[in-house]
Amino acid sequence: MKYSYYPGCTLKNKAKDLDAYARASAKALGFELEEIEDWQCCGGVYPLGTDEIASKLSSVRTLNAAKEKGQDLVTLCSACHHVVKRVNDDMKNVEDIRTRANNYMQLEEPYAGETEVLHFLEVLRDRVGFDKLKEKVVNPLKGKKIGAYYGCLLLRPGKVLGFDNPENPTIIEDFIRAIGATPVVYPYRNECCGGYISLKEKEMAKNMCDKIIDSAEGFGAEMLITACPLCMYNLNKSTEGKIPVVYFTELLAEALGVKEEVEF
Amino acid sequence: MSHVNKVDQIKEISGVNPLKCMKCGKCSASCPSFNEMDIKPHQFVSYVQNGDVESLVKSKSLWKCLSCFACLERCPRDVKPAKLIDAARQIVVREKGATYLSPDEVPELLDEELPQQLLVSAFRRYRR
Image (cartoon, rainbow over all chains, first blue to last red; front, side):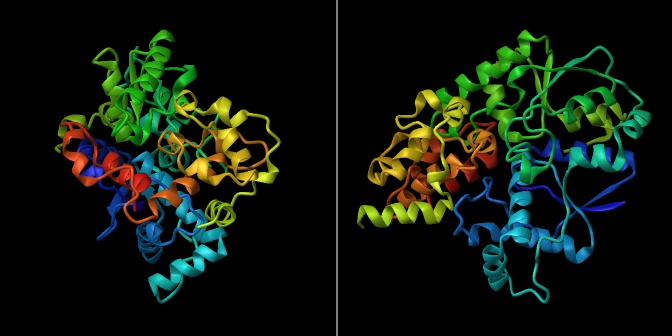
């Protein structure tokens, strides 16, 4: 099975490991991530203004590229997923945005939200299946107590993202079980890490992350996993090494026995 | 620009009807930036209802909202306070020279681990 794949800017730079472990794991699980050609940055945040069109076009180009290949589109970074998924929803459901974006695009066939956007975790849950994943695990991470850190962007708004129950998600806990480890459920797992506030208001982001880390630690987590490079950056400023924060794809590659062969 | 125009502008950019708000306060109760905000999310809605956009565009809150969408998710009336805050922010940053982040500030804000995503996101939210 081949999927179109949108890595996004950070996965080509500071988060090369998030990307490399995902590609190796996909191969081990029998599917391929085919990178979209000439993709552009998603912008990092979804433009909320109803009159914002130009700032959504990079996502539309990506979505249309996948459509032309007849493939579903896989994302990995939480922020890219959020932006691309929401723009796709606009293209499907908001006539004004669809018309105006297509006026810019000048495509042979207008784009109207045809592409299905899946986060890598959704591929694991809905296409591979966590049961099948469990069967492919050669190095189960037994005894590891892992807290899932969801953050905001994968979950909210739940009606558009459709990722999981936004208030009580289970997908990452199910993932943790599938790779043989023990999930730790803690209250702050879907609270915000501060996001982009950490550029100018570093203290504010740190206060938020301290609460998340304290909550996870208090419930017995020895490690946190995330899909988002910005969450990881913000959380790492708070943990000061107390609890390691790693990408879920690194543990996946480890469990599948392909971690050592990954280069980045 | 008159006050009336700015009220229309904020409604148009946000696509929000503030009259739907029933003042339950769930947005402010959910907001992780609540303590940092001078005008709280539920008050944002009231300010728009009362036509006082001038106070909103001068508010510190514009730069404290994280776009975490907790308010938007939990609003029982689908008022979307985060969209109102963003619309007020847009009214500011769409004016020439008005911005919360200048490229000149960036070098001293950087560190070795800082992800590209953070710069891109901040530029998108803080300036045009």
